[in-house]
Amino acid sequence: MTNEVGRTDTNGLVRAFRDAFGREPEGVWSAPGRVNLIGEHTDYNHGLCLPMAIPRRTHVIASAREDRVVRLVSRQLPGERTVALDRLLDGDRGGWAAYAVGVLWALEQAGHRVGGLDVLVDGRVPLGAGLSSSAALECAVALAAVDLFALRGFDGDEGRRALARVCVRAENEVAGAPTGGMDQTASLLARPDTVLLLDFDGDHAPRHVPFDLDAHDLSVLVLNTRAQHSLDDGRYGNRREECARAVDELGVASLRDVGPAQLDEALRRLSDDLLRRRVRHVVTEVDRVTRTVEALQLDDLAALSGLFEESHASLRDDFEVSCAELDLAVETARAAGALAARMTGGGFGGSAIAVIRTVDTDVISAAVEQAFADRGFREPECFPVTATGAASRER
Ligand code: GLA
Image (cartoon, rainbow, N blue to C red):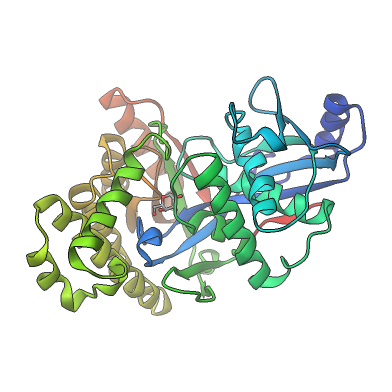
């Protein structure tokens, strides 16, 4: 693996921190991006999803400050951001810096005492690719804050779930992206060679489902379409509002309360076709997560293939969050020999994933690149990933 993906040069990061801030860092923390195997737009509907952490991580090198100012420098983006913690909500929130400073704000809202920070960010989760670069930044900053301000209550899986909720609040209320909790939970709780079965109906502990691709000579290939994906431009929020409208019309607590057996009856009671399609996606998608877990337990790749195909079609036709680039990536990967393929994450651009035989990595990547060139799309970025571990302190 290249340096970019795997081993990050932490000594280099420490030197860069000294250059930027003229002082010693107190530690280095990192958090992974994620792909979601299946279960899309279900988290905010109290449903199920099945993400895994990927080896692309965001590193945060930080030291606490005496005052309540946060200074941030990124190795990927130009300029220094300076944000006063006490004026965060008043005006300019610092663009990308809002994801980091928002976490400090949300920790204080949850009753924890924090202060200012000097932070150098090295983000190797591709930006705008639907691979949760923002959650990776939030989670790495959250771990840094827990250590640097000696915060209590964030140990173990329980504590990490509480920390994930803090990060979601930062994203929703400070960064202005109305996302559910899948990305932050995956980044803070994932384990190697497993996918995380998350149930957002109530307070369920996540289940770690074995997903040892190497043992079967399989890989997950990420197909980053490079079609711009954003979660704060209103389209993701529209889907949330449509689901909320359906919940009102049906008089249920959440769409999770509509099981597959009640779907037809629920569809009859909805006032328009758009809401019917949105509800049909959510209800069938939650069911597909359960069936995917069964397929993984039985090593049933044929079943997995069918479930991925149904999921992609449902996101494309009923939930309407796919796009031409995602559809092309999925169709081409399948035609070139992928065992299963679908879009992953919020959609409107971003990435697709394909479960492939590892030997087919180059052939399938080349087929997708060629298809994009033929259609005049931007060159996609194809790279295999394994299921890796959660956010951690590096030194
Ligand atoms: C984004 C959001 C998640 C989830 C997915 C869609 O990644 O951050 O909360 O809703 O989209 O499954």
